[in-house]
Image (cartoon, rainbow, N blue to C red; front, top):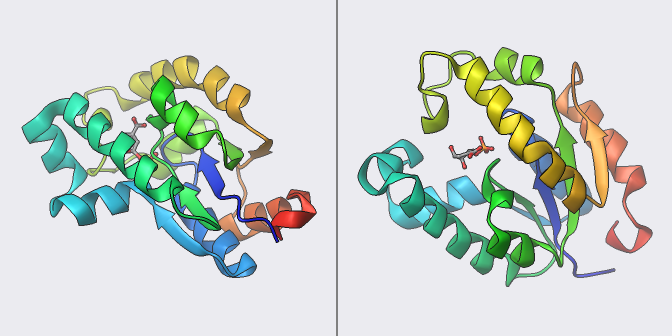
Length: 172
Ligand code: S3P
């Protein structure tokens, strides 16, 4: 079996953590969520990091977290939605098998409408923000992806069940 990490990318609310956990338990791998890893290491939540250090401070912590996680083997890793926008991070992630969870802004809105934990969405018009991020990031997700799965109107279990048979045999 290959030691290669399986890495989930995609926008906020695409289900990276839930689907990642399902895939990990199915494949007998350890699961890590980079946001959660950052919170554990820092001892405070992400909104607090943004408040004190700004987005730049958070991004520096995110790069360090991705470095540490990808130094390990055979993991399933859920990344933060903005991680792919740093070239350094794209290099760090490139050794993994990358799955893009392709989710529409409508679906994101349905899932994140009342979210208080994502600093980038604490604006008067979260839809507009999601649309802007979607336009900037979607080509980057698509370019990095080894596998791309549409998640709209699907339960996490269904998405995970679709992914497993499409993984290269040496990863399962
Ligand atoms: C962000 C996504 C979040 C988190 C932070 C910034 C982004 O992760 O890293 O709030 O820039 O899209 P999720 O994609 O897990 O929500």
